Image (spheres, one colour):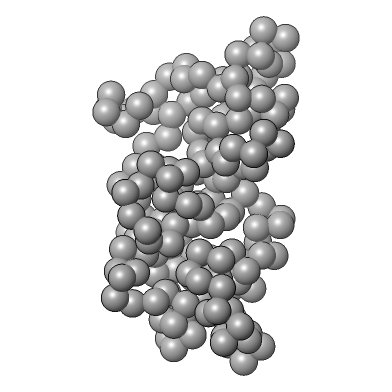
Length: 163
C-alpha cells in the first residue's frame, strides 16, 4: 500500500514503498478506470480508516478529476458523508495519476481550497440525550450514526461563504 503524506503546502503526496511497484499488477489496475483504480490501490487504508476515494458530486465539485479525502463515512443509509480534507488531481484530462505513480513512484494531489477551514458540528440527537458528540466537519454522527449534525460554531477565519 502506498504512503500518504500531507506536504507542507497542504498538497497530498502518494508514494510507493520500496519494491512496491513490482508487486502491483498495473495492467489490471488501469483497466478499472481512475477512481476505481485508486480505490483498489488504497484498499487496505480504506478498510482501516476514514480515507477514501470520493465522487465529485459527493463534495459538490464540478469536475471529473479523481478526488481523495481523509474523512469519509458510508452509513447504512447509503449516502456518502465527506467531512474531512479533500485533495484532487486537476490535470486528469491530460495526465493519468496512476501512470505518474507507476512511472515516478509518487504522485501529488492538490489540496482543495476549503481544507483547514473546519467547522464544529454537534449531533442534535446525541445532545438531547446528554451524549457528547462533537466533531469537525459535517455529515453523519459517529456516535448514533444519524444525520443530526448541526453547525455550532465556525473556526476562526472561516467566512460565511464556506458554510
